[in-house]
Length: 66
Image (cartoon, rainbow, N blue to C red; front, side, top):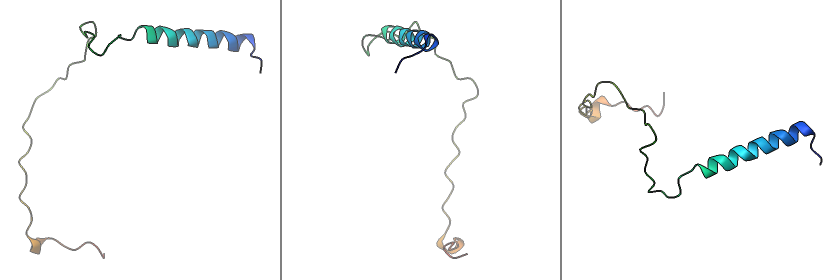
């Protein structure tokens, strides 16, 4: 199958983008990450609500058959 000139240009540009992105990846997993700015979470830190007491067996309805 032969590509038209527009498809060939798009293919070359996308291939170049893929190669550039792979070349920009760190070589090892231990690469320093100081150059990347990580977004910081903002807001209030609150404690998790206390676990509610379990219901007694008499308070629980059987919802199998409505």
